[in-house]
Image (cartoon, rainbow, N blue to C red; front, top):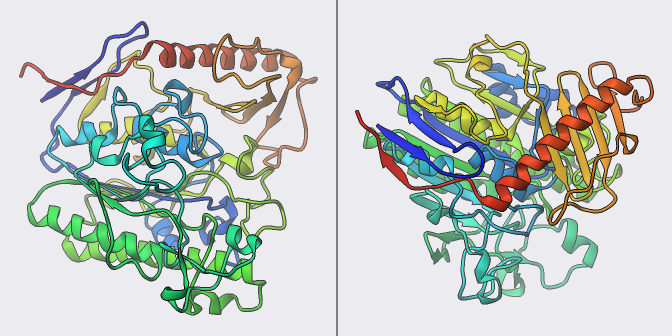
Length: 491
């Protein structure tokens, strides 16, 4: 048994073991990159072929109102591993900050219970090398942001700092227009004539140099599956984080995967194709779990890190939601999401209960018999009752901050507003209800009808709740309230 605790000005985060499950579940966290809510078949998408995700949806639970903690990738990823909003620990945007050593991650908590832990794909929570140029920030100039997955609880890693092309991830065509460079290109035919993309895969401190041609989602799964098989052969529970790069730009797909979309423009062909290629790898994972005999007791979560890139003319679909990536309107943060656990989740269910990536940590800790002490400064809740079909209402609000944008979701209502200036540092700007809009998402999922004037009391109430939450986050950021050191508890 273990007690994980910390001291701070705020209530101390602590995790203590409850009833011990003789067969702890295996856990897989999968995340797509910039996948829109309407891009998948299980949310009504009619263009992109996602049969494996649709099968997973039929076998598990679909979240109709699942939120990324942020409208961009790095902050969301940190929330999934810590259960905390990124403004508690300083990852305000993509390519900024890093996962701090004081933050307790899911991998660190699960490893104390004997789990094998692995990270595969995009990390984006710190640099992976201090000795050479790599990706957006790697190398000596950004050594202060060195925080790789293998120093945050992961035993086995096949990870990149940030984005790569979704096919032949190490290569870029030698000659290509700037627009294509940013969006898409055909697969490289002659690697000798190509140039290096500039982002490397790293495995526990070593640059990976071999077998990096082809579909990137397949390359990631090629590393994740042996890790899972090895853990099963050792009869060891496993925690596998599989964070795909698709469909983040630049999108590249081979002819096999663009062929079904030949009637669409090239950019869309590659966008759609790399999603179908990703979908195939999810089917491959589910088949392997069945063949290994561990499917029943494996909890799989799938989501996207934020909404789709670009404007309304870009291929990604929000399914009619307002806004896109970088926006705190629904299209930027409401993402496709699933959970599957045959032993515990009834197949074919959908829920409209609001949930968020910060819910992963308290839910998974509860699933393995760990309790989060009351008063712990987490921003997520335990969704185990929801997975069991026993939770119909979420009492806790879900709050958001990104740059000058603020939002808060409580039940059917959503508050959305903007600050005069970004509040990352210094004194917090007082929140003025007149700078906020109020929407009823049950009746107005597209956020078209502002209820602020008609519901002044509710507007003021939610604005105050958002202000209290912001001040709690700044206290965490200022004072620190996490400790990663496990301390053995009295039996």
